[in-house]
Image (cartoon, rainbow, N blue to C red; front, side):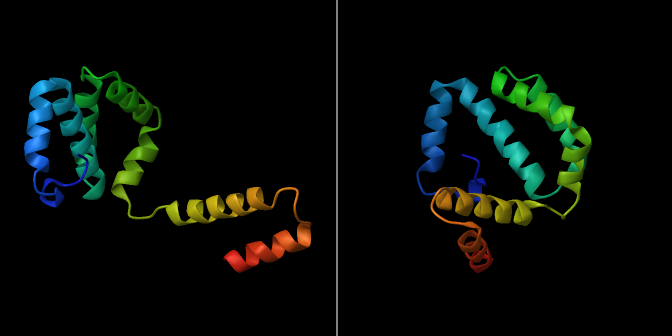
Length: 121
């Protein structure tokens, strides 16, 4: 449902229409979710404030809580939507190294762990 509508598979549109007719809250969830995804995907920082207001006024508590948490770190969120720079690749490397460390816990000394890290990079 968060995918762009042009990427939906055949029949998805009818299924979503059926589900939203039965559950009106789902329509709001889809609209807010797609709106936020579009905002981030296309880097539209001017739309962030409008989206936050819509989410804060939502009947869905998950979106209200999400908007509240975004407001608490507003400057970082605004920079994330505005700038093309990201620490995602660094976080990915750290996550992979932590996984390797967990896999080797209690099984290897520092020498083997160091070799494993170097080979993983």
